[in-house]
Image (tube, rainbow, N blue to C red):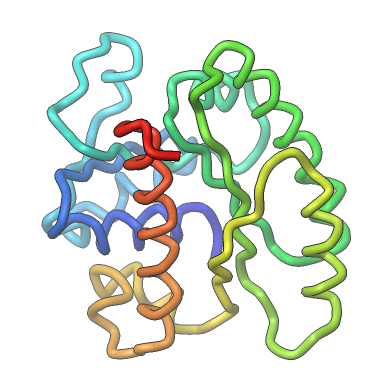
Length: 194
């Protein structure tokens, strides 16, 4: 499960609680391609980024390209929160360094933007998880408390209108704390509670 699956599931979870929109900047256009499966989600067109006419929303979730681009830096500069999904592997530890550097640069322009790494597609019962977490803790971006385990249910969730509709309590028990952790950081920032 990657960025798009996380973005969609966060959107599905939050849509009944907050005014949430989802914007697809991924060149693959996966979110836009889902069409009717996005029932209840507000799909926001990319043009809002250039014309600045953003609909009245509490949260706009942006699905980004799968690789580092200039556009990613621009998105970080206008964001309140940047979620960095991280697949637990040694190669990804090296790859995420470039994203961490982009976020650090963007924070010079947007110092209030809060980033967070989420451990994603975590395998059960392996010492690698703890070893990787220790390395990530040395980075200037905090690792969120919530971990998203590797589960087939996440794959199904995309065509089932989110994790809440697939009957797998474990995935809801993972995604809800992730949503709460992100919204909690945004709320604290907006109200000045730290």
